[in-house]
Amino acid sequence: MTPQATRRFFLVAKPLVFLASLLPLCWIGWLAWQGGLGANPVETLSHRTGDWSLRFLLLTLMVTPTRRLTGWNRLQQFRRMLGLFAFFYVSLHFAVYLIFDQFFDGSAIVADVIKRPYLTVGFAAFLLLIPLAITSTQGMMKRLGRNWQRLHRLVYLIAVLGVLHYAWLVKADLTEPLLYGGALAILLGYRLWWRSTR
Image 1 (cartoon, rainbow, N blue to C red):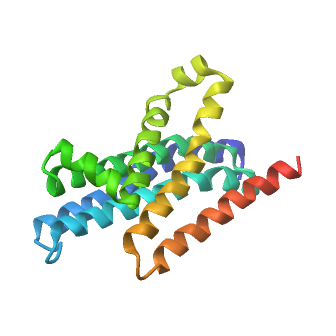
Image 2: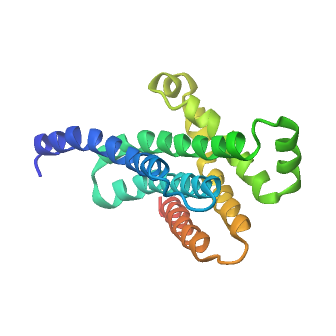
């Protein structure tokens, strides 16, 4: 593919990726509209938004390895978008808990977060994502310089906390958390290998 064709491809791909990233939200909204969220709609909303939070975190972490393996450096353009969508779905996940589960009861939320380890790590991951979302602009990248990259390495810890949050939540059937954990281990392992060979 010529450089010009590659440029045209990515110009088209970027809005398509943006629209595709909204499809999970549209599907959840459609299910809610049709009454298809099951006997426990709040739990279903929580699980679906949580699942997509983890998926977008992993997709964000996939960008750099894929770019290195394919040589398509323009793939880096998608990393910020996917990272912001991860934050978007995490925010929805937290909003479901805040609004529909706890009804904005601050004291109950604090007690719940302290009492339940899966909520503790989940809340920690959400808090750590906030500075990453705030500093995702080009202006903040220039302002922070090398510190920007150091700060955004928190995404590795956030992803680990996200997998732990899911594993401690489900307790019994660990199939899905283990799949997410395996994918994360591969992505982090690749980064360690890459650094060791440079």
